[in-house]
Length: 208
Image (cartoon, rainbow, N blue to C red; front, side, top):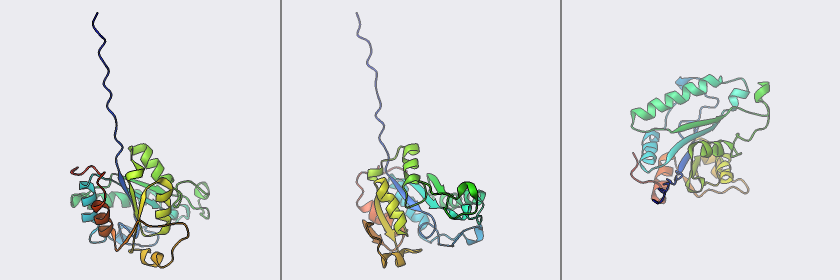
């Protein structure tokens, strides 16, 4: 009697990611960004993202958008801004794989958004959601941001953490937050990409 054929199982391998804060890290800090005329890229951002793409990392933008709860920024504009960022990156051969934003703030004026939540940084909810939806390996991932709360969220999610001196970063560096540490403090996103790629042998090197 012939033996039944063995079923073959393909083991899924989780992917490392770089979680990048938006305002002050990927693009210039503009307060409550509510018009595309105020959306300004740092000159090195496209190159930095492209290098991380080639290093095998998924790129996930995570951003607190309290302006939505405060009634300053329409949530539809956040999608418009992210589409603009995507287009600008793609024109330079770079890509963001996903965007996650938190629309909440406890002191907002939009009732359904004015409460504590798990997605507003320093809570790790945005990263945990992305990891579940995108099959990401948080232990091999990094967060890059200009605020201690960016790094605190990353630590809570299990990532390594890089503080940049752009945006609020230079001021944050001078005012350490108890219990929050950076694996590296660098000048900008380009420096963060270089630091990550220099010490990240687990990334799927060579991915387009």
